[in-house]
Amino acid sequence: MKKKSIRLIKLLCLPMVLFAIYSCDKPSVQEQINPQDLTDLIVSVGGVEEVSMQDEEPMASAALLNREGIQSQSKPQVQSLESYDVVSELIKAPIAQGKVVLASRSSQEQGKVNGAKALAMDPGMKYRLLLYMSDGKFAGSYHLTSGTETKIDVVKGHPYTWIAYSYNSTDDVADVADHNNPKIPTIPGKEMLYATGSITVTGPGQVNKPLRVYFLQKLGRVGVQLHARGMFAGIRSANVTLGSDSYFKMGTVNLKTGDIENLQPYTVSGPLDFQNLETDSKDTIKVAYFYTADMAAIPNFEYTLNNFVLNLDDNSTRTFTSPASFSYNISPSVGISKIANLNMLESPLTVAGVRWARTNLYFSYADRAYRFRHKIGFEYPRGEEDYWNFKAPFPDGTIGKQDPCTRVYPLNVWRMPNRDEIQKLVAVDASSLRELKNDYVEYVATGVAAPYPSNKLRINKFGFLHVIAGLFTVSGEKTDGYFWSSETGFLGGAMTGVYGYRVSDNLSVPLFGENVWEYWAISSWGGKENIRCVRN
Image 1 (cartoon, rainbow, N blue to C red):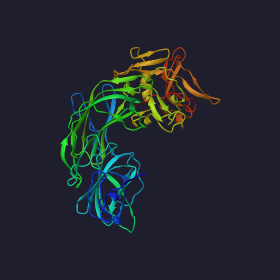
Image 2 (image 1 turned 90 degrees about the vertical axis):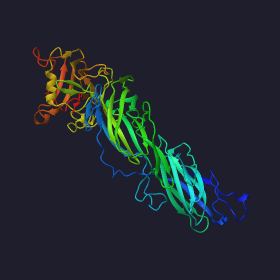
Image 3 (image 1 turned 135 degrees about the horizontal axis):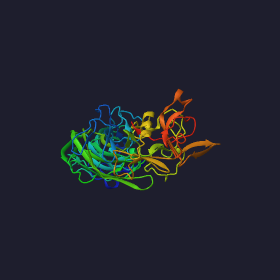
Image 4 (image 1 turned 45 degrees about the vertical axis):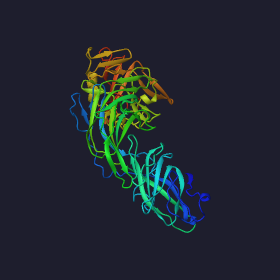
């Protein structure tokens, strides 16, 4: 930690017996003292107190507004919109979530709340410390920086009261206008951190007394979060507007009492300014935050997602332009984020009453993620990540251990098709509903969405993957297409194998067979096949 010394006594400018102590920003005569009574107060930031979630009520459910503006749902569940699906919900977390939890500190440390954990404050954040004498007289104002220790001259044996405040920002922190009645405004878009305490330096000789400042949050935070992991894409842009421009309030912090006074609404106008949630999530999760000094309930917090653009896995984009509005009942809490979270999901294609994923499931080994391809053609280089052991948690995972479709985000929204659902797809054989092509078969689907290049359910002839002498080989590509069901045959498939779907250039039975059939005489211990998920 860096060290900085603020010398308040100009020894060469004062008589040898009487001295005056000065602030680094504003001078203030404390009293006439002997220089031998001066010592150092070493000020640093200990952290930001973690806010307990124990007293928080369970999150209220989000409600979707249909085109007439009427609430149509009261519980978080998958809801189908015109062009995509959503799971809307309220989530909560401490404002400082994700910060490093510092080691346990003594409850006797200055400014620390008994039993509370302290979260690290990023270095370089500016804060201001006000120092007062025991009789309330102002003694000094200091502009300080987290991550740096600063020495301040004080008088041994003299009790002091101190106040610290910060916007948790690298921007300079202004001094108060009146040190006898210190007040500071909250600022829209910034946190408000506050701490106060008392300290007396005692002991013989030169004493270096530490003062570690532990800040408390003073504001609540409300967020709007767009989550595109369920669409397997990054968010290039999003246009979101609030239902009102005066949901949130600012105020003035009375630094002597810690109370927030003079609450006034501040205006949030135009499309919201979204930022990436964190580095690891990249551009798949975007969030816009608002700080409020008023903890009164917001009974109808509403926003409208007017349009958004996604980055696809082939470097192209996909634009969604059908507006949708969402409403929540939010009760802000000091130090807590209440986030209106919108999980956006790729819409399925419905054939014979079954809602199918548009493309096959694959596993990204680079990101350890379960995804669907954005497009259905042969343009992707296929490999191990596209071909799966039967009901395995990973493409080469243990057979029969887990349905991998349930691991697609959000969890348990998708699953592998059962035998009955495969039979329903096989039974669709009318030429008006099914078209056989050289490399694939396509089905007419209902509930289609305009932004997608194709709204037909396509099963490509990608063949299957098997291992010969340690080498992976795709067999039957552009001749046969397969995908697993979730069900095995007689004795767990030991004799009859696993039920599945097959489309082929060849007939199931010579001369009289079909090009599409339920393919059950396959071994779960044989080659790897594609997986096409269905909605749970």
